[in-house]
Length: 196
Image (cartoon, rainbow, N blue to C red; front, side, top):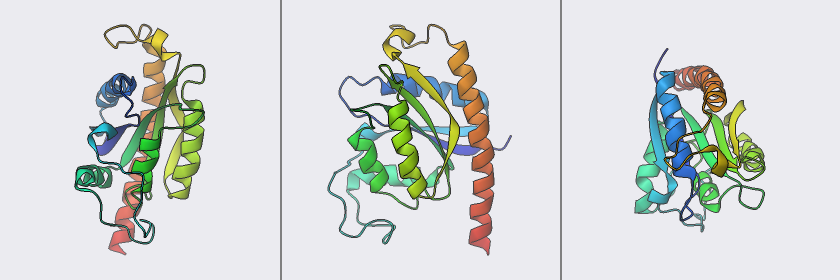
């Protein structure tokens, strides 16, 4: 299996967030899969102002960005695929995640994206549905498979390990297989486009 770069993005920057635990679990699943070089990106480490540049990245792909966003932009550009780890906030996804998306454009273009959701009753599915619409607009391909943790606080123990890991691990492997297929196809298509 060819090695592709997979960025696992922790979408919440809220103090005390659970996203780091979920992302660590998923990164372990991705490493076990063997088809990806995994990069865990924590949006809490980036400078993500909500005020966007005057000219949108769709028209100016490399707008002046804050110094604290340079590393994030480079890591997004290097990725062949993404997995967004997101909670539900008020039936949608976090503002920091929207800012990270909106500050970029070419970094998402013609790449594939999967989702791992966690929250109370919905397990992050409300956020995931909104994100599918956003990434479709950015010419990214979202895979239909996902991993969801409803009532995540009952599913993980105090050390951040799943109490019953088999079903989520199987869902993760299925999603990773699909991500790998699409990431391989889209990487080849991007290369062909550049060579043409």
